[in-house]
Amino acid sequence: MESHYIFENTKRVTVSTIAQMKAAGEKIAMLTVYDYTMARLVDAAGVDIMLVGDSAANTMAGYSTTLPITLQEMMVYARSVVRAREHALVVFDMPFGSYQTGLDDAVSNAVSVMKETGCDALKLEGGSEHLDVVRRFVECGIPVMGHLGLQPQRVNAYGGFALRATQQAEADKLKKDALLLQEAGCFALVLEKIPATLAAEVASSLSIPVIGIGAGPNVDGQVLVLQDMLGMSGTFHPKFLRTYANIGEQITKAAAQYVADVKQSDFPSLEESY
Image (cartoon, rainbow, N blue to C red):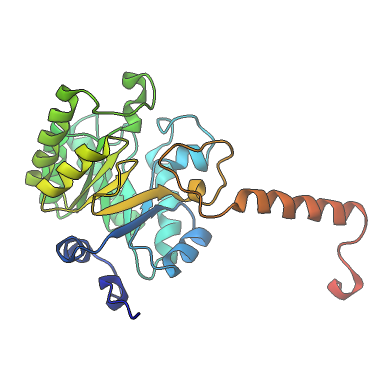
């Protein structure tokens, strides 16, 4: 059956495209990407949004949390992704410390990212406590994606990565913050690791798209970490993760075969030599 997805008729996805997708009831597919090679492949697959996530701290640098990665490190990844992009909207995840130290610092960092990477939008964690930052970014012409629920940059305050907003007070704050972020000008919102019923309620109450990760099916789109969904993250396998391939095992197997071929003088062969 012929499909009529909005993205198929769009050379370049923009924030306006994302809004149209919500209005049309078309689900939004977002993946994290950090380098040119993977971005080229993911973009060709038709993903709507590529997120240069601060999860690069985990997947690319080997840290246990997202806190250590710097703005400068993130910008290197972002430039690589943008160079590969033909289709997808590229969103830059503002890392810890890049917008929490004051409005002037936040704006300066945001402008640097937009000028030096070529990304299309910024994402930042937090609700009412960062509304001034969101408003100022929007006033500067920078599209902003919000992030509520589990906020990995607050892991030390949480004491871990457990499901959030299971208690009424936190759920009520999340719903209020979602509306405040929409009013402040966010073009979309990520909800991470919250009860599916709460996520559905938030998505239905907002006019902007809601993209979930561990937030159930009744939102406007989904995001996963690329290395996780490709089976490259070892034993990490939370309930919300669907593994679409086992690339990690294939890479290890291929590398092991290469090692064996070199050790046994089987590679290179005469046909592979000049």
